[in-house]
Length: 350
Image 1 (cartoon, rainbow, N blue to C red):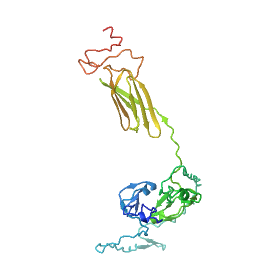
Image 2: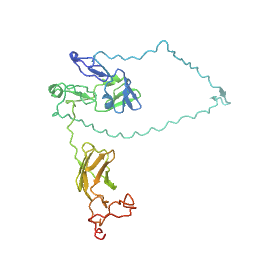
Image 3: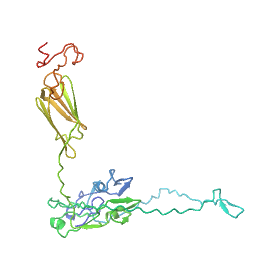
């Protein structure tokens, strides 16, 4: 099957199914500037080379196997080319001393250069061994998927052809290197100037298996973490803040009960926060809610009565408490009348 020569495509195709929208490619060449990589025909820029190769094409057309033509646009006849003439510098005046030594200009006579002592070469650090990732043969592969190894470019056809005993995967285990216009791979010494020639550099390592899906990933062990939390109250609600970053909003669970709230929050990297919190006073579950923010989770619980909470959880240290004042002020502080709960020890003395 022919291989498409369009930039960014380079896939095998069947001419019988080739249409005007079958190929997604880049009509212009690549750009590498100050660590950023992209194509001159579109504005997206990335940092790593793998991300650069994954940039989708910005033009659509038919697949083709015609050779790619590279040329520089010639300047039009209307454009004026400015030519700058350089004149040779006039020789500096020569002064002759009595001892016959010639000194050019007014600069002092340079002293003879002393060659520095050759530095002792430092011992090269041993290269770290490259660990090859093996493909998980139990995972099925879709037809047409490209090998993940750099420089291979082979696509999956069938189990026999792409995963059989006669398979040969030739690839580069190193990373791409772009330095002063030259392009190559860190694993082999060959360097080229053109980007198209760089993509054609044959791999320097050979193995008998392609890498289409990668090795089977081990499931991450879930880690229970502790998150700081704080609370405050108003006359009608208890506001609880759980300081946890990047909580998954879809999987966050906050279950409200009359005298209890159950919290279950999942975070990246397998972290999880779970808390069963008994409450100091009853709440109304139907009037309670929570909201997941970027750095915390805000939980709002509606009080079941107007009593001011001495603590968030039940505590033996709380001997008595008062409700928020209803006359003379909005809260307990500044109120002219103190309203006690019916189960307060001071209620019988009132």
